[in-house]
Length: 109
Image (tube, rainbow, N blue to C red; front, top):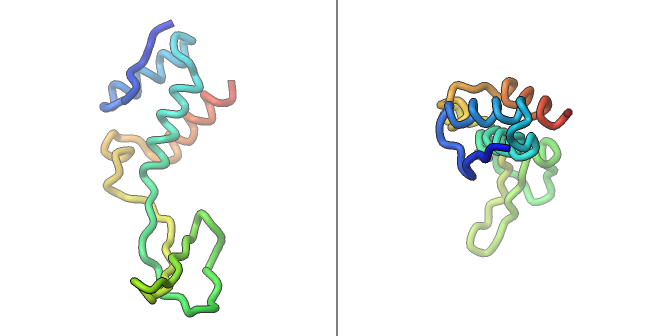
């Protein structure tokens, strides 16, 4: 069984890890975690709107997050989960659907 680096940096690293996992020469679960992390890192929260004290968020977590008012910041804000178009996933030439398919494939067997 071949080992893969703890940190995959390039498209070639990811492609090689995937090939090793598919052939059984690397742990499928480990490679799936690398791809899942790549997809998760493409998401971040951005400001959506200011909420009144008793106003409910537009939707549930994790799609929406609320920052509560405090003494330092009296404004209650709603943040929305968004995809970063500059994320590493896209820089490496992957799409979210492609990575989700890979994670599903590696986790299913």
